[in-house]
Amino acid sequence: MPRAPDASRQRATAWIGTHGAPTPTIRLNATETQRFLARLDAPAGPNHALTRAMARFRIARIGPSDAAFDGVPRSTRG
Image (cartoon, rainbow, N blue to C red; front, side, top):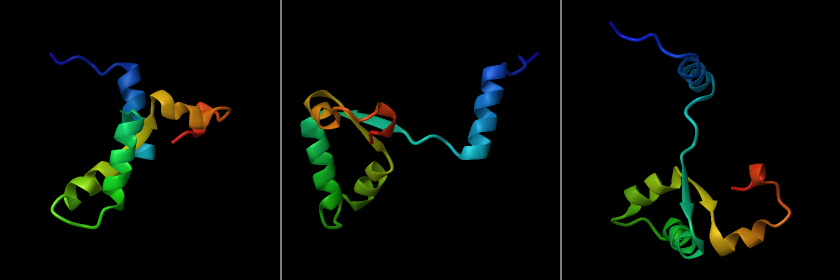
């Protein structure tokens, strides 16, 4: 007999139904961030589909690049 969904799963399902799925986050260091942004600025080419797929992710910067966010609340970083 299948288990009944737990309360947290029901709340998550209801939230996604109301707000849409959360934006996935990828964590990049400073070098990876620069490469990622360079690809977004590159003209459309053979990697264009990959670039557009990558653009769907929100970048959470880590490491030395966090210094740029000093004094900025974490909830507003992006």
